[in-house]
Length: 184
Image (cartoon, rainbow, N blue to C red; front, top):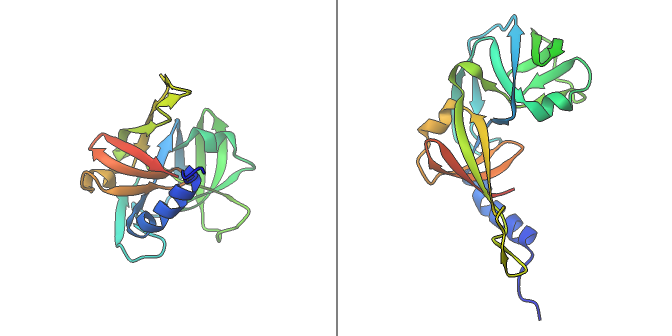
């Protein structure tokens, strides 16, 4: 009898333990620049966890941000919502984006996007381990490296701390410049 549990089941089981104590952080891969006019504030406070009271982090901002290249490619229409920040009306999308902050209420139809402030973005490498052997042969692609931009709050976390990068998955902070992907 096959006694190995499917990896998906193991991830699901592990997520139940890790989720409650994992801080949430924004992370952007393949970054694209966006400049936002008429921002009415110079910082935002974002909860460290959507349910559990794990405090808030204060993020200093100006009009310059990074968003994910994948989010830019999948953009529909001229409105987006930057998570924890507000609605943005896009006025220019030709490589770099430009937009304007709007006071409109959140709309479930608007694409919700995570972001990183350009002025204090922190670049890290995420190591993504894959299957080491395939049919008894060493898999030369068993370790993927992904360079990403994350929030400056990452620097305040302890080495070994578990993080959930929003819309990416769980990682363990290995050092100031590196995290190791653990699971979705």
